[in-house]
Length: 323
Figure 1 (tube, helix red, strand yellow):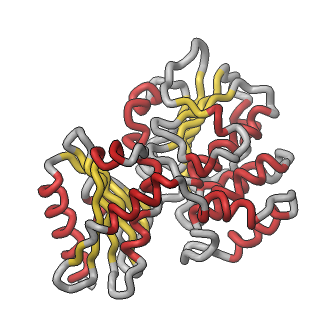
Figure 2: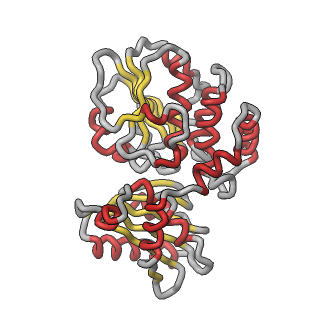
Figure 3: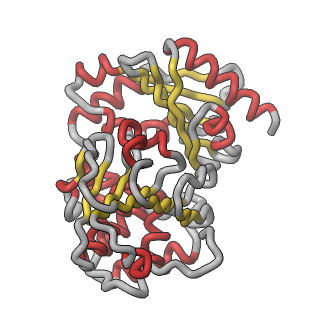
């Protein structure tokens, strides 16, 4: 993590802040949600006024997490000194309409593991070698806080989510050691896996069927993509959170090097998700205004759907042609 001195959360909180706000990104995943709730749970033991925010719907698969109902989707700063913890966000744009208000707070602590993080905080705790933001939160909390079952469950969800249940290449010996310590607190890995990887609403299955019907390949067979739009979401009475993970179906095709998922919205902008097997797809996402990891990244691009698809495919094709 950036900074030459060891980070002590209790010392940071001693700065007489009246309100503690925890934020995470649009289209939140398990790492974003679990990390936020774990930190909030720990800070509440310090008798702090703690609130958690996300500018988007929390996917129903995470409804079993303690405190998930406390997420708010609108932010109005309270009177008094305020400190913001921004978790799992490579840039403030991922907070969407909350970002501008966050900048008015007295201090911003940026905690993240994305290599593309823009270090926008007054204090930046960035470790791109960590498999998840949950790992970083664990290291921050482990020495000064009692990791009860609730905190441990949230951290385990964060870590298992961002490692694909410990099968992605970002899984390290340290990742497994931390997971083992969380299991010692009573976390049931079968229960967590069932909730976040194996159960889906009926609407999600119909959405996936529709999305797979749009599957296309480039002439090399190394790039494949699917797309949905907001009209389809309305037809299936679904929300955008249910699209989480669809891009993996594209990437997992045997011949494919890069899988892409396009979500065309009603506002002439497209949310693009990338997954790759060997190339650094984060470089493409960053060039298009987004960010992420070498094998998993994303961005949002304004324009007509056909224009966005053309721009993205050209960028990915250039990346692959460079080897």
